[in-house]
Image 1 (tube, helix red, strand yellow):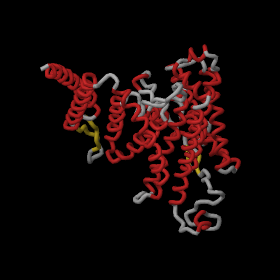
Image 2: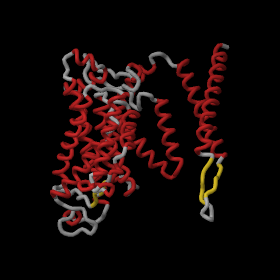
Image 3: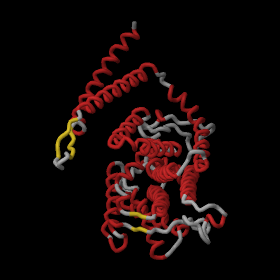
Image 4: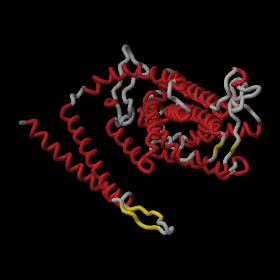
Length: 436
């Protein structure tokens, strides 16, 4: 009898919330989806109504909110207090096997049956965002510095490589570390003015910094080409061997006795970005175990306590900005050599938002979570490409559902960097919201 009494109010609350959500959805979708302008046979515009689509969306919102509310009520009433703590250990142990499986699949992807040019290009795109996410994870996830202008370092790396290769004739392997160093230098320049800022104020300043870099690239026409960008960027070589479609002397195909194919260059670029991403991951994991990495995590939790312990906050913040920017510069150099063309339109604020969404949805401070989030967001976005105008709605709805289901990220629990005695995974419920 008591179970029935508790279930009836829960159903009533869920129905009320679902009805309110459906009304709000109606207010949003009536003008945005229900009314649309189309071009008639004579070229004149006419208004077309789509009330069936609006009704379908309202039903979807109603059902989704109803199920989410019931799930929240069930979690509150049924779940034991220590449930998340009990499953944190098994999840952490299972993560030890998930990461090697992902790595094995990434290494074997080009030789798997059924994998063609499209899958390789998608893999390159996903790995690029994985590398960018791991670079931003140093700044946001480990150091706790909210950066909304990370795309600026991405742009600095891309333009540094393009300009050095164009004006000085340097190869990719020489320009790659130089692009990273230049991006790190700009990261330090950004870090100095924002040493005393935190939270929303820091986010606004970094957002402005990203827009300043984009506007400079857009208006400095004599150097960057302005809106026309830079084309004909040099491609990387494999120990001096070029990847030409027709083969010939000095080419990769001619040296190894292979049939010339454009797939060779794509496979080489895939393994190149995989190596750069793994390098980023390895450096980050090594630094987390060092005093610098522990200082980052301590500053993320409580900056005032760090100062009282004698930690140099200035050096800690600048190193976080510099290292995060350096990996962004590496990714930018790879982007430039892969595309052979760059323009300011490739480095807008939406890129920073996507990278930050990958870090937050994956779990702040979690390397595996960032990789999974990049695969879900970037790869999933390509899966829904055939939906055309509906794909952004599906994409946004998926992000909302992820944050409702896992508000601290896909991988919220993690093993502490340093522990006295046995290392036990820290559940996301034991830390602040979003700090898992």
